[in-house]
Length: 113
Ligand code: AMP
View (cartoon, rainbow, N blue to C red):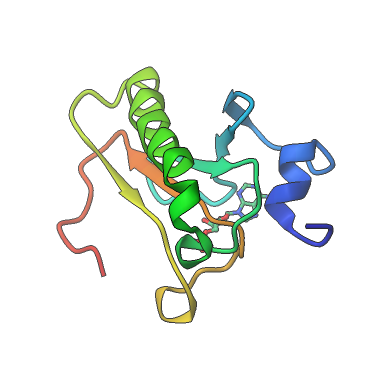
């Protein structure tokens, strides 16, 4: 997607603080962190949000969630972490490329909404 911010980050056209990359996923630090550790994990393929993912893509999403756990471990989040994926306007999704937030490194709020 030519006008997608995260596609541009994945292609290296916009700089990012890379945490992890392989042929399927890219992970980088959120520019406006909401916790001591705040990493965004995104598929390299463009999906606008969770609802854009079809049954044939579930292998990729399972892989991506496993990578979230691996990244949490590599970031030292041994005491726990939170993953969030905002989907659509009511959830305040601001970048229309499916992504998972990995948050941790401190005690997080017990409120999720
Ligand atoms: P969401 O609001 O769930 O769509 O999350 C989008 C996230 O992307 C927000 O937490 C932003 O802080 C983050 N973000 C926006 N632009 C950049 C950027 N250039 N580099 C890293 N993170 C970004």
